[in-house]
Length: 349
Image (tube, rainbow, N blue to C red):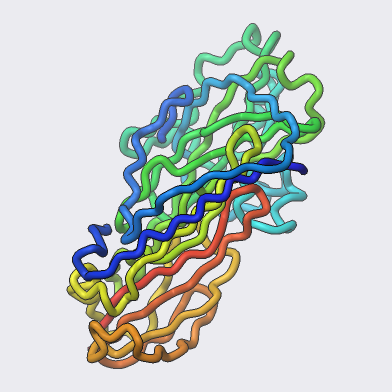
């Protein structure tokens, strides 16, 4: 697809430790909570240019509600989704979408997933699926269709909202984004169902349906060891965003070396375990590398790092105090993604 490319070359070079800065939806209709993600240790600037053309994308008006569904690894969640063929193609950010054209189909959905999703349960301020869908009648389905999107997370604490619903080349896409990413997550898996009514006239020419979690910035990383967790510090990153009109925005930001951020990385996470788990709010497509430095090298950014052994999202820790840096990559197939550096400080007793 031809597209405009706006290149934002941002290099906010920070020369002192103090300049590291502080680190750190529920959606009714399309209104979301303010973005409360931890602030990275970098501040990109921008310089714009454009070239090329973009295909026309139609935006569909929507009125979305969210309900609590709980987490499940039931294979039929994906097997019965309209976009089941997308899950193995590339990025894991495709999420299941379903469509109910009649009240009978809505009730059938509830019956099919009654042992999979928590239909009558709530979580904090999030209502149950039964409550959200209680007012849908046969009259509603005369002119409307109900889209259902399931999104899961590694924690109960993040929040999501429907960012947009668009139509392009016969494919309707629902874009879900993080509206709140906590500095530290709990360890409980979670899941939500978005209910999105749309008018039949708006989707009559749609032959495919898809839903994706869009990553407007690098996901947060929490490091867990011995039932204790610490939020990693976001450092240098290169990121891509795709606007609803198809325009691509590239953001590049530089950050101080981890060894120059002692104040932000202290105190260390203390553990007696030999491993730690990396819990991203959205798992990367690849962990590129992990290296570490002994804490005797604070304020010595020219010191050589030691490459670490890791298996998936689990890393082997070294005895004593070490500063670790993780480089992870998210594919940008759907217009969102890039590479990000994270750092954290751990002492193994």
